[in-house]
Length: 440
Image (cartoon, rainbow, N blue to C red; front, side, top):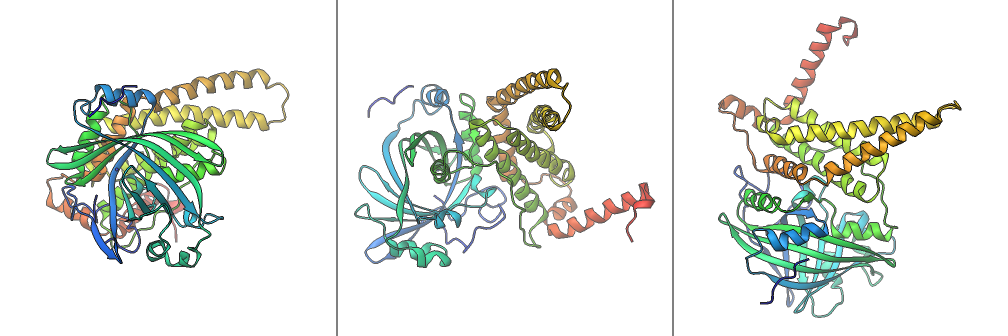
């Protein structure tokens, strides 16, 4: 094996649609259930139905070099492969609009067709459903696509599917047996090409093949000691479509979360917390490419929601309120707040009809530049992302450790019950403080 250069399966019969709760895949201890792929015979081919369980992080060139040269992976054996992926869609991108990606991936010894469902944003942190099949030639198996794509799209799956962009990466794989779990760490370096445009890609994927998700986080913590692991929620497919559209995208405004009324309160809280982190990470990735007032605003809203959730649910999820992660999030929230205040002030002055605001405006612009510099400095810091990873681990793996059995039972009750109770108590307090605003 040559020297390395120095310079993401959980198989199960998945439901028809992704579930809006984290608890259906891992047990109370975060143990991956039924940890193997499901194989389905289709004619002479073998199709694979699987659900990826992985953590994905964005890297800089320096981070890649540090992981190769100075991390716990450095002395371990590794395997390199060149992966050439071509993504297909209709002329009006119906697959992408339905949350589905279709690709052919060619490596040295095989060609694999994959139909992948992009999970809801909060779930894409670690789960994605996919259907794979090996094909003899770089030609789409349309019957396989029709069988597994959303029913409303089946009639559009025909010879009119065309290549929309390509992703070429050199992947370095390390296979580990880490604390009793089977994990693959993959380092991807390459290029996304779409519409004559190119964009570099550097990612680390930690894929849990079998075992406890806590072990995947443990490996991430070890690697975060030498590299800044920025939580990534945007897939290669999404980045390719964005590049095809011109390389820019509007900042993400998340839709409301839909939960069944009988979802346990604790799981509902965790789902909302995951949504907040994903909301933040998606906008941070865009902000790193294009600094703007809207990016600052959306990141700040995400952290404000997360801090509010921690405070409101402190009785049920004490671990989310304690520790260094919350302090780091509050620090980031303050820095974003300073930049946001200056953005609002500058916008107000620009709309003003007064003619003597030039000097004030220049001063505010200088202050905003300094505030943005501090925001960028924080978002590029290893410490900030290590704290975010720790919080993500607490949300996904941690269960309520309150020793009182009654408190634990409260966490398992339907979230709708506590939402009504909390609203009633809030209105009672409002009536006590301000009788004049009491509702009839």
